[in-house]
Length: 89
Image (cartoon, rainbow, N blue to C red; front, top):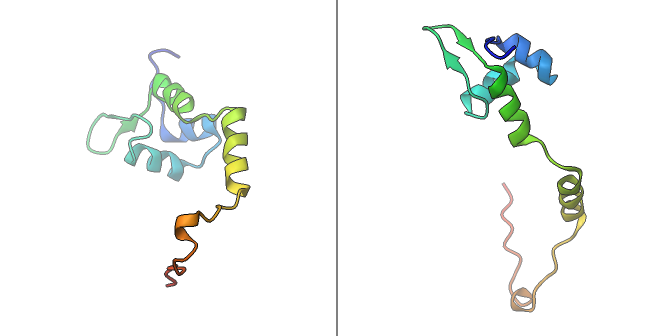
């Protein structure tokens, strides 16, 4: 598969995403895409592997983020006399 170009449908199947999400990743420059004409776009296996490498989170990173999410921010002494300025829309 080294020289094979992949369609968005094939990439979606490989990654377990829907096709629209693959196109979104390409628009956001998170996965490289080759433009082969006005309407033809293809992906390389290397681009897919790079995406996986760049956006894979280790177990340790996931656990760290999960712990941070459940921690409540501690009020600092500098802010204890300041009013709450949360803006509600």
